[in-house]
Length: 199
Image 1 (tube, rainbow, N blue to C red):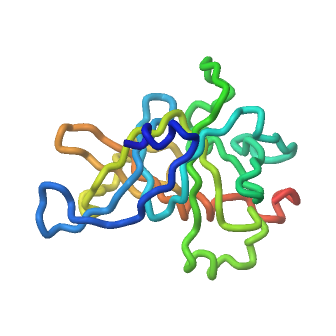
Image 2 (cartoon, rainbow, N blue to C red):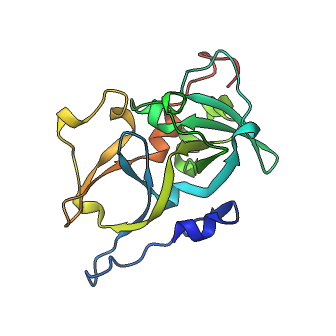
């Protein structure tokens, strides 16, 4: 489980694709399951991720004059990693409005594909590299999902801020509904250099 890897501070994600358990011959896609605030559970494709980090709050350096959901920067393996409050970005309750007191943040490091990098070469100054840290409430476990079962959500359940980053919803057999996000869309939605000289 993810929590076992996190005991050391980080874990590397396994980016393999295997048959969906219980459905022989059907390829499934592996997703990381995590909690946001407001009792929202979401998924991100594992192939769009690099690591999950446990970061001391004091090691994220705030940068002024950026969108409110940009928490600051973190020194990740010698690179500058921009940290984003994912709940705030998609229209949920921001971290700073939470009553939870914590000494560390859980962050998912996502990266863009080579295809995305090629299409957006001119905007590469956004992060220096196409990587981003998404701060979430809690990482849970891996889920296998047949992408064919990802559905469009009811319009009444979607915030306007979520729409650009939403791949769809997955309704599990037990009735649980999970938000499926697109990491590449999140990276593509970051401010361009002409919006802020800090990027």
